[in-house]
Length: 313
Image 1 (cartoon, rainbow, N blue to C red):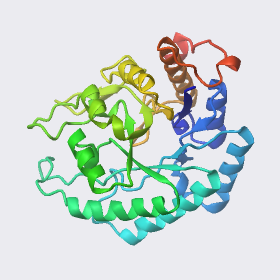
Image 2 (image 1 turned 90 degrees about the vertical axis):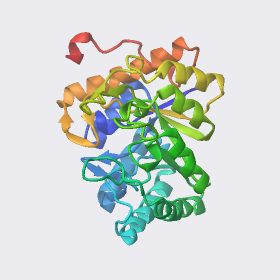
Image 3 (image 1 turned 180 degrees about the vertical axis):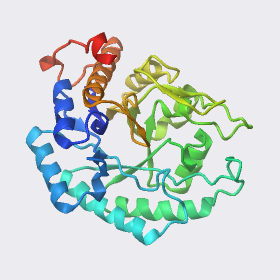
Image 4 (image 1 turned 135 degrees about the horizontal axis):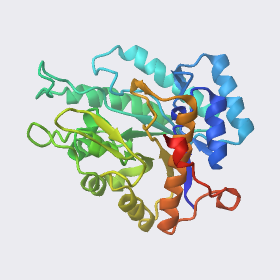
Protein backbone atom coordinates (compact mmCIF):
# COMPACT_ATOMS: atom_id res chain seq x y z
CA UNK A 1 0.00 0.00 0.00
CA UNK A 2 1.48 3.34 -1.10
CA UNK A 3 1.10 6.17 1.40
CA UNK A 4 0.67 9.64 -0.04
CA UNK A 5 1.39 13.08 1.38
CA UNK A 6 1.78 16.61 0.12
CA UNK A 7 3.56 19.87 0.67
CA UNK A 8 0.12 21.33 1.31
CA UNK A 9 1.45 24.87 1.74
CA UNK A 10 1.32 24.89 -2.06
CA UNK A 11 -2.47 24.46 -1.84
CA UNK A 12 -3.09 27.06 0.88
CA UNK A 13 -1.18 29.25 3.31
CA UNK A 14 -3.26 28.49 6.40
CA UNK A 15 -3.35 25.09 8.06
CA UNK A 16 -7.13 24.85 7.66
CA UNK A 17 -6.83 25.17 3.88
CA UNK A 18 -3.94 22.71 3.81
CA UNK A 19 -6.02 20.17 5.71
CA UNK A 20 -8.96 20.78 3.37
CA UNK A 21 -6.78 19.96 0.35
CA UNK A 22 -5.62 16.69 1.90
CA UNK A 23 -9.16 15.77 2.93
CA UNK A 24 -10.36 16.33 -0.64
CA UNK A 25 -7.74 13.82 -1.77
CA UNK A 26 -8.48 11.48 1.13
CA UNK A 27 -4.81 11.50 2.15
CA UNK A 28 -3.47 11.07 5.66
CA UNK A 29 -0.05 12.69 5.32
CA UNK A 30 1.39 16.19 5.16
CA UNK A 31 5.03 17.14 4.69
CA UNK A 32 4.76 20.06 7.05
CA UNK A 33 6.81 22.99 5.81
CA UNK A 34 5.22 26.43 6.25
CA UNK A 35 2.02 27.82 7.72
CA UNK A 36 1.06 31.37 6.79
CA UNK A 37 4.51 31.77 5.25
CA UNK A 38 6.46 30.73 8.36
CA UNK A 39 8.35 27.45 8.57
CA UNK A 40 7.02 25.02 11.15
CA UNK A 41 10.19 25.21 13.22
CA UNK A 42 9.96 29.02 13.37
CA UNK A 43 6.29 29.35 14.37
CA UNK A 44 5.76 30.76 17.85
CA UNK A 45 4.73 28.18 20.43
CA UNK A 46 1.07 29.16 20.50
CA UNK A 47 0.67 29.06 16.72
CA UNK A 48 2.54 25.76 16.47
CA UNK A 49 0.23 24.25 19.08
CA UNK A 50 -2.76 25.40 17.01
CA UNK A 51 -1.27 23.64 13.99
CA UNK A 52 -0.60 20.46 15.95
CA UNK A 53 -4.15 20.35 17.31
CA UNK A 54 -5.62 20.93 13.85
CA UNK A 55 -3.58 18.08 12.35
CA UNK A 56 -4.42 15.76 15.24
CA UNK A 57 -8.11 16.58 14.91
CA UNK A 58 -8.02 15.78 11.20
CA UNK A 59 -6.10 12.53 11.71
CA UNK A 60 -3.21 13.72 9.54
CA UNK A 61 0.33 12.43 10.09
CA UNK A 62 3.59 14.30 9.48
CA UNK A 63 5.97 11.68 8.01
CA UNK A 64 8.66 14.29 7.38
CA UNK A 65 9.22 17.89 8.44
CA UNK A 66 10.30 20.12 5.57
CA UNK A 67 12.84 22.24 7.41
CA UNK A 68 14.96 25.04 5.96
CA UNK A 69 18.07 23.71 7.75
CA UNK A 70 21.22 24.18 5.62
CA UNK A 71 19.11 24.96 2.55
CA UNK A 72 19.98 27.15 -0.45
CA UNK A 73 19.24 30.27 1.61
CA UNK A 74 21.92 29.46 4.18
CA UNK A 75 25.66 29.98 3.74
CA UNK A 76 28.15 27.48 5.08
CA UNK A 77 29.86 30.21 7.14
CA UNK A 78 26.63 31.49 8.77
CA UNK A 79 26.24 31.74 12.55
CA UNK A 80 26.25 28.12 13.65
CA UNK A 81 24.86 28.85 17.11
CA UNK A 82 21.67 30.13 15.50
CA UNK A 83 21.55 27.14 13.17
CA UNK A 84 21.81 24.68 16.05
CA UNK A 85 19.08 26.56 17.92
CA UNK A 86 16.84 25.90 14.92
CA UNK A 87 17.84 22.23 15.07
CA UNK A 88 16.84 22.04 18.74
CA UNK A 89 13.45 23.67 18.05
CA UNK A 90 12.94 21.26 15.18
CA UNK A 91 13.71 18.25 17.36
CA UNK A 92 11.24 19.40 20.01
CA UNK A 93 8.50 19.92 17.44
CA UNK A 94 9.14 16.61 15.70
CA UNK A 95 8.71 14.87 19.06
CA UNK A 96 5.40 16.64 19.57
CA UNK A 97 4.23 15.68 16.08
CA UNK A 98 5.53 12.10 16.26
CA UNK A 99 7.69 12.78 13.19
CA UNK A 100 10.82 10.75 12.53
CA UNK A 101 12.25 12.25 9.32
CA UNK A 102 13.50 15.78 8.70
CA UNK A 103 14.50 17.23 5.33
CA UNK A 104 17.87 19.01 5.29
CA UNK A 105 20.21 20.24 2.56
CA UNK A 106 23.93 21.10 2.38
CA UNK A 107 24.22 24.90 2.20
CA UNK A 108 24.33 27.30 -0.72
CA UNK A 109 26.80 26.71 -3.52
CA UNK A 110 29.75 29.14 -3.45
CA UNK A 111 29.82 31.13 -6.69
CA UNK A 112 32.30 33.43 -8.40
CA UNK A 113 31.39 36.87 -9.79
CA UNK A 114 30.21 35.22 -13.01
CA UNK A 115 27.81 32.91 -11.23
CA UNK A 116 29.90 29.75 -11.62
CA UNK A 117 30.81 27.45 -8.71
CA UNK A 118 34.14 28.20 -7.06
CA UNK A 119 36.75 25.41 -7.16
CA UNK A 120 36.83 25.43 -3.36
CA UNK A 121 33.37 24.66 -1.99
CA UNK A 122 34.52 24.44 1.66
CA UNK A 123 33.64 20.75 1.72
CA UNK A 124 35.32 20.17 5.08
CA UNK A 125 33.29 22.87 6.78
CA UNK A 126 30.06 21.62 5.20
CA UNK A 127 30.73 18.13 6.51
CA UNK A 128 31.68 19.41 9.96
CA UNK A 129 28.52 21.46 10.32
CA UNK A 130 26.09 19.13 8.61
CA UNK A 131 27.63 16.22 10.49
CA UNK A 132 26.93 17.95 13.80
CA UNK A 133 23.37 18.69 12.72
CA UNK A 134 22.75 15.11 11.65
CA UNK A 135 24.33 13.76 14.85
CA UNK A 136 21.80 15.68 16.95
CA UNK A 137 18.88 14.25 15.01
CA UNK A 138 20.36 10.75 15.11
CA UNK A 139 20.82 11.01 18.89
CA UNK A 140 17.06 11.55 19.17
CA UNK A 141 16.23 8.56 16.96
CA UNK A 142 15.42 10.79 13.99
CA UNK A 143 16.52 10.45 10.37
CA UNK A 144 17.94 13.50 8.54
CA UNK A 145 17.25 13.12 4.82
CA UNK A 146 19.19 15.23 2.33
CA UNK A 147 17.25 16.44 -0.70
CA UNK A 148 18.88 16.47 -4.15
CA UNK A 149 18.24 20.21 -4.48
CA UNK A 150 20.43 23.12 -5.61
CA UNK A 151 22.89 22.97 -2.73
CA UNK A 152 26.27 21.25 -2.59
CA UNK A 153 24.89 17.71 -2.35
CA UNK A 154 22.62 18.29 -5.35
CA UNK A 155 25.29 19.54 -7.75
CA UNK A 156 25.43 16.02 -9.25
CA UNK A 157 24.80 12.45 -8.11
CA UNK A 158 28.54 12.17 -7.39
CA UNK A 159 28.33 15.12 -4.99
CA UNK A 160 25.43 13.41 -3.22
CA UNK A 161 27.39 10.19 -2.77
CA UNK A 162 30.46 12.10 -1.59
CA UNK A 163 28.38 13.78 1.10
CA UNK A 164 26.72 10.53 2.18
CA UNK A 165 30.09 8.83 2.50
CA UNK A 166 31.28 11.63 4.79
CA UNK A 167 28.10 11.69 6.93
CA UNK A 168 26.93 8.09 7.46
CA UNK A 169 23.93 9.10 9.62
CA UNK A 170 22.33 10.93 6.68
CA UNK A 171 19.99 9.37 4.11
CA UNK A 172 18.33 10.75 0.99
CA UNK A 173 14.98 12.15 -0.02
CA UNK A 174 14.86 11.93 -3.80
CA UNK A 175 12.89 14.61 -5.64
CA UNK A 176 12.01 13.27 -9.08
CA UNK A 177 11.88 16.74 -10.65
CA UNK A 178 15.04 18.24 -9.25
CA UNK A 179 17.56 16.61 -11.64
CA UNK A 180 15.95 18.16 -14.72
CA UNK A 181 15.74 21.50 -12.89
CA UNK A 182 19.35 21.49 -11.72
CA UNK A 183 22.61 22.01 -13.65
CA UNK A 184 24.98 19.05 -13.74
CA UNK A 185 28.07 20.65 -12.26
CA UNK A 186 30.12 17.52 -12.85
CA UNK A 187 30.10 18.44 -16.56
CA UNK A 188 31.63 21.41 -18.39
CA UNK A 189 29.98 24.83 -18.61
CA UNK A 190 27.29 25.69 -19.71
CA UNK A 191 26.19 22.83 -17.45
CA UNK A 192 23.40 20.75 -18.98
CA UNK A 193 20.50 19.62 -16.83
CA UNK A 194 21.02 16.45 -14.86
CA UNK A 195 19.47 13.25 -16.19
CA UNK A 196 16.69 12.10 -13.86
CA UNK A 197 17.06 8.36 -14.52
CA UNK A 198 20.86 8.44 -14.24
CA UNK A 199 20.66 10.28 -10.91
CA UNK A 200 17.97 7.93 -9.61
CA UNK A 201 19.87 4.76 -10.47
CA UNK A 202 23.00 5.98 -8.67
CA UNK A 203 21.20 7.25 -5.57
CA UNK A 204 18.28 4.86 -5.02
CA UNK A 205 20.06 2.51 -2.57
CA UNK A 206 20.22 5.41 -0.08
CA UNK A 207 16.70 6.78 -0.73
CA UNK A 208 14.21 6.46 2.13
CA UNK A 209 11.70 9.12 1.07
CA UNK A 210 10.47 10.51 -2.27
CA UNK A 211 9.09 13.84 -3.50
CA UNK A 212 7.08 13.88 -6.72
CA UNK A 213 7.69 16.80 -9.04
CA UNK A 214 8.08 17.15 -12.82
CA UNK A 215 9.55 19.92 -14.91
CA UNK A 216 12.70 21.26 -16.48
CA UNK A 217 15.14 24.16 -16.60
CA UNK A 218 16.07 25.97 -19.80
CA UNK A 219 19.91 25.85 -19.63
CA UNK A 220 20.17 28.95 -21.82
CA UNK A 221 17.98 31.22 -19.70
CA UNK A 222 17.62 29.42 -16.38
CA UNK A 223 13.84 29.66 -16.59
CA UNK A 224 11.88 26.79 -15.04
CA UNK A 225 8.74 25.02 -16.24
CA UNK A 226 6.60 22.78 -14.02
CA UNK A 227 4.04 20.26 -15.25
CA UNK A 228 1.87 17.43 -13.95
CA UNK A 229 3.70 14.18 -13.07
CA UNK A 230 4.57 12.22 -16.19
CA UNK A 231 4.22 15.21 -18.55
CA UNK A 232 7.87 16.29 -18.37
CA UNK A 233 11.37 14.78 -18.64
CA UNK A 234 11.63 13.73 -14.97
CA UNK A 235 10.89 10.05 -15.76
CA UNK A 236 8.27 9.92 -13.00
CA UNK A 237 6.44 6.78 -14.28
CA UNK A 238 9.72 4.87 -14.73
CA UNK A 239 11.03 5.87 -11.32
CA UNK A 240 7.75 4.96 -9.64
CA UNK A 241 7.73 1.64 -11.48
CA UNK A 242 11.25 0.93 -10.29
CA UNK A 243 10.25 1.87 -6.74
CA UNK A 244 7.38 -0.58 -6.79
CA UNK A 245 9.52 -3.33 -8.30
CA UNK A 246 12.12 -2.72 -5.59
CA UNK A 247 9.55 -2.98 -2.81
CA UNK A 248 9.68 0.68 -1.76
CA UNK A 249 7.53 1.13 1.34
CA UNK A 250 8.05 4.78 2.22
CA UNK A 251 5.91 7.84 1.58
CA UNK A 252 5.44 9.75 -1.68
CA UNK A 253 5.00 13.51 -1.22
CA UNK A 254 3.74 15.76 -4.02
CA UNK A 255 5.39 19.15 -4.52
CA UNK A 256 3.75 20.53 -7.68
CA UNK A 257 5.38 24.00 -7.91
CA UNK A 258 2.79 24.75 -10.61
CA UNK A 259 0.88 27.42 -8.71
CA UNK A 260 3.11 28.20 -5.74
CA UNK A 261 6.90 27.84 -5.51
CA UNK A 262 8.37 27.88 -1.99
CA UNK A 263 11.71 29.33 -3.09
CA UNK A 264 10.14 32.00 -5.34
CA UNK A 265 7.45 34.05 -3.61
CA UNK A 266 6.63 35.83 -6.90
CA UNK A 267 5.02 32.61 -8.19
CA UNK A 268 1.72 32.37 -6.34
CA UNK A 269 -1.63 31.86 -8.07
CA UNK A 270 -5.06 32.63 -6.66
CA UNK A 271 -6.28 30.54 -3.76
CA UNK A 272 -8.83 28.61 -5.84
CA UNK A 273 -6.31 27.83 -8.55
CA UNK A 274 -3.69 26.71 -6.01
CA UNK A 275 -6.17 24.32 -4.45
CA UNK A 276 -7.42 23.00 -7.80
CA UNK A 277 -3.93 22.33 -9.15
CA UNK A 278 -2.79 20.66 -5.93
CA UNK A 279 -5.80 18.33 -5.91
CA UNK A 280 -5.50 17.45 -9.57
CA UNK A 281 -1.79 16.84 -9.16
CA UNK A 282 -2.61 14.34 -6.45
CA UNK A 283 -5.29 12.69 -8.57
CA UNK A 284 -2.93 12.30 -11.49
CA UNK A 285 -0.29 10.73 -9.28
CA UNK A 286 -2.90 8.24 -8.07
CA UNK A 287 -3.75 7.38 -11.69
CA UNK A 288 -0.07 6.78 -12.47
CA UNK A 289 0.30 4.53 -9.45
CA UNK A 290 -2.81 2.50 -10.27
CA UNK A 291 -1.63 2.08 -13.86
CA UNK A 292 1.57 0.64 -12.41
CA UNK A 293 -0.47 -1.80 -10.35
CA UNK A 294 -0.08 -0.08 -6.98
CA UNK A 295 -2.74 0.03 -4.29
CA UNK A 296 -3.20 3.59 -3.05
CA UNK A 297 -4.11 4.24 0.57
CA UNK A 298 -7.75 5.26 0.91
CA UNK A 299 -8.91 4.00 -2.50
CA UNK A 300 -12.02 2.44 -1.00
CA UNK A 301 -13.41 5.81 0.13
CA UNK A 302 -11.99 8.17 -2.46
CA UNK A 303 -14.00 9.72 -5.31
CA UNK A 304 -12.42 9.15 -8.71
CA UNK A 305 -13.36 12.43 -10.36
CA UNK A 306 -10.61 14.68 -11.66
CA UNK A 307 -10.53 18.46 -11.50
CA UNK A 308 -12.07 19.86 -14.66
CA UNK A 309 -10.06 21.37 -17.46
CA UNK A 310 -11.82 24.68 -16.81
CA UNK A 311 -10.61 24.69 -13.17
CA UNK A 312 -7.02 24.48 -14.32
CA UNK A 313 -7.24 27.57 -16.50
